Image (cartoon, rainbow, N blue to C red):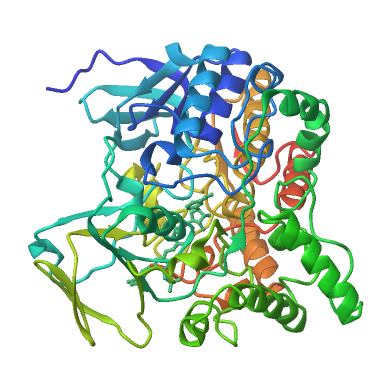
Length: 535
Ligand code: N01
């Protein structure tokens, strides 16, 4: 039975990852009556759902945390690139320190949300059949909340277990002595592979496109060292907002073609030795916009990786002579010994380009080359990024149109936050914002500050309704597309291009610079929030 004894809020946030938690903190402090709802039983966003063995973040401490003083000053990490358990503990620390728990309703999924024109409010139907309402709806679902499971015939008859990495059982799965089939070699696939190779009886990795993985260079962190480093944190947090990727630095202003080979290779080597994603975000100015510059980086990467693989055939499959796509146009992953696992007797690599999967059989995966037995299939096959989670929330706007219908010809959103026909709704970390291109907390804070300022402005000006102007929305959507055209991103079949999901329209789904985005959003605010019709 539906519980009509509902409550009304000024704002309801959906999602307890970085963007949702930041919004909750900001809006509560600004005096709004706010509630956060999340289907997960614990905060952490993707770090709740992606608890597969080896899951850890690819941004180093202190980039991947909030800049809120009382939070970072009282927290100590144990590793430079923390794992999912520590990240979850961090989120609990955030909620304790900021006293957010009373405004959080965990373990509750929003089944649907629709806008009531007359009442000028959103009504949300929760999965425990409670209905709640709010003036402002703020979905903060992250870009990776809807896993993508390819349609392999026969999966329903598989007699073993199978899981998507983003729906890993919370109680864990022991990989020891199992025959593991792992499909997908993105960031998730690499991390699972490295762990499974340690204990699985057999690990068969099904690769469609080789990942261009970079050395992580993990390190243990001591409390003393961290206390010392904390003296520089404020400057780093400030810097994050001024860089295109939300990191501590960005690409050089020098072209890779302006310098000779010796100098170019010296910079590549410097980035390589420092580790992490720096080879991606601190590289030459034209890494992601000029094919020749990009090819130099690819060749450097290829030669480094090939030097670690003795078997020439394996080397060609993992690090081909010619790039499968321009370097960095698919998200590089960080690895810790990934290329070495293929020399182990218990690990096999199947190249799906030459050996496609035909079907799943009750105890095996069958390719054109025959069957390979397995008792556990891991799908590390990615996400319907950006739109998937929002579509699943069944959001219906003022004219009875669902968000999925509104986006049937492609994603559109003003500033990557507001959609015409969907009044009083702003999403954080959503499509057409920098989200997927940016270090998470950096983008969550830029958008969270802007959204909070805007809602305060609405309140101060006694306005209670806003909606994206269709022309401004079309303009922004075009800006994102044009920004993409200036880069090499359109050349890869990546999730950045929404090209990983068969029926999605191919388009760049994120704005490629956080610092430029922040400046554009500030300009909109300074000019009285143009592009948003308010009343
Ligand atoms: O997903 P992906 P992910 N048959 O889409 C393959 C973040 N993240 O979960 O490249 C066979 O990157 C697909 O092949 P191809 C990060 O931003 C961060 O790994 O399309 N294979 C690819 O190899 C990341 O970018 C962290 O040819 C199929 C893989 O599956 C994003 O999340 C950790 C297939 C999917 O790779 C997504 O990463 C994890 C099919 N039908 C994730 N369909 C950290 O920070 C797809 N594939 C550590």
